[in-house]
Length: 309
Ligand code: AMP
Ligand code: MG
Image (cartoon, rainbow, N blue to C red; front, side):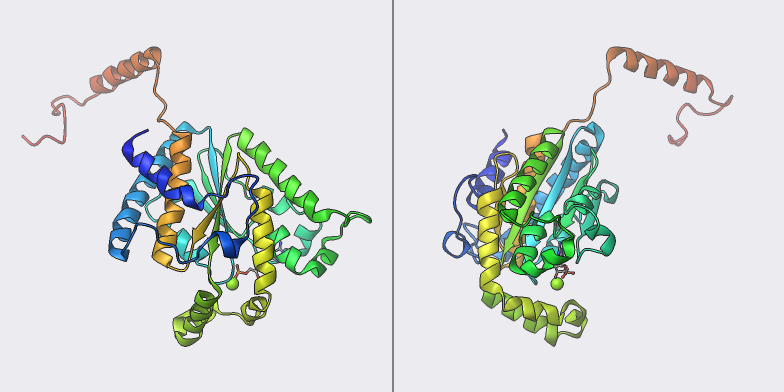
């Protein structure tokens, strides 16, 4: 491991939810944590370095074509999911990234098992897929508003022990994916209630932010404590050795972006994708083709047309 890679691994360690540990969000994680990075300016430099590293690794991921990366982003409203995606993925080749945003399920989606629509959007090998909201909504919004289950057309009797079963099914699904080359990075953007209040105020006060504000967001805010409990249980039950959760301090947008970028970068470093090298035979074949192409140069042309005479 290079010293830069070690620095990234050390930086993200405090955000990791130890598999098997019991999390109480309010007690265990601070939304306004900024560790040793004192200023936004210094943070900007780190983010730029992180973005450069991501671009390089993504290109290798694509070339190697054995692994995909799924980035799962969860947060409360105004938590900064959209901005994080925009900033962190800027340097990356758009051909290698696909973002999927999950809203209230359609009637077609409700006609399938709850994991179906997420399975359809999984990244292929060589790709980074980003889930803006994800299968975790099935144990978050659906758990906070249990009446949503009524629309899921579940077989009779399946409500007993349903949440416990869902946590297990999600863990098993992710284990299967991981074992088959799809690495999962789970980021929870941890926002304080006060910071959410001020972001909502901005959305109301700034005309070009109005579209982002919905009355539903304010109604959900009334369920703040229920969500904190649902998030805490989700983190405790589904942070696994193969797909651990990272709790990203989200009260400072600039900090959240660096931290999110660092966790994604760390995953790519762990995969360590390489450009495939060609064997001796293939190299010889290339040389032969090269000689052939050179022989086809029109009579009288310079050997290299880019060299001016
Ligand atoms: P937004 O991400 O702000 O555009 O809002 C999307 C909305 O869809 C949020 O209010 C989510 O709670 C809701 N949503 C996402 N997934 C589900 C789900 N599986 N069941 C019910 N509501 C969902
Ligand atoms: Mg919203």
